[in-house]
Length: 112
Length: 115
View 1 (tube, rainbow over the protein chains, first blue to last red):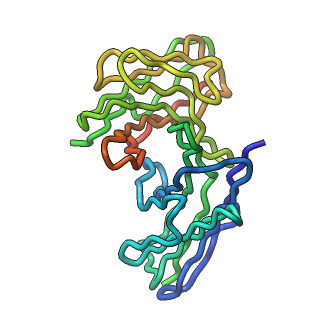
View 2 (tube, chains in turn green, blue):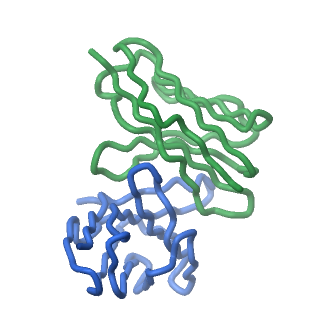
């Protein structure tokens, strides 16, 4: 069956450190993978997209990698700040299918 | 004003009642979606529409129906609500366009409680 797996345990991290989240998938051949941020009670907000032929993408303090051999994406928040505390969702779009499927999300708590 | 607006934001209803959740968007996007979010289950797709004449079932469409009244409006109906439909519902839009990113723009959510 198709799965998108994110760590269910919250990541507690000290302010200023780099937070790294993992998204693993099985039985998908995604054309691209996206990352979203969701604050409690709010709708998810798009952060970054990485295509299957890209290894790495950066946006300000965010970095995403995509390894189609390992079927894994890593999401990094460098110099983390308390305002980065949120749940981060990965989502992917299988080839020939533009419906995004989402992981369950991974909560990040940045401790001042 | 929000680009994707959902109404109502909160609703408490009783089992067996008919409920409609409405979504309107000002982004000019052709594609609209309804997701539900449950703790521990993440976002799951209920229905989606790629244009006014196109309606498709998602992974959990049973017990739901939708109507695409116009490019900007997409409503979700629960004909006879049941308690396990208690969830947070999100409407989203996307526009592949020339960038072909499929990025979703979400509304603020409609919290539905079925007693």
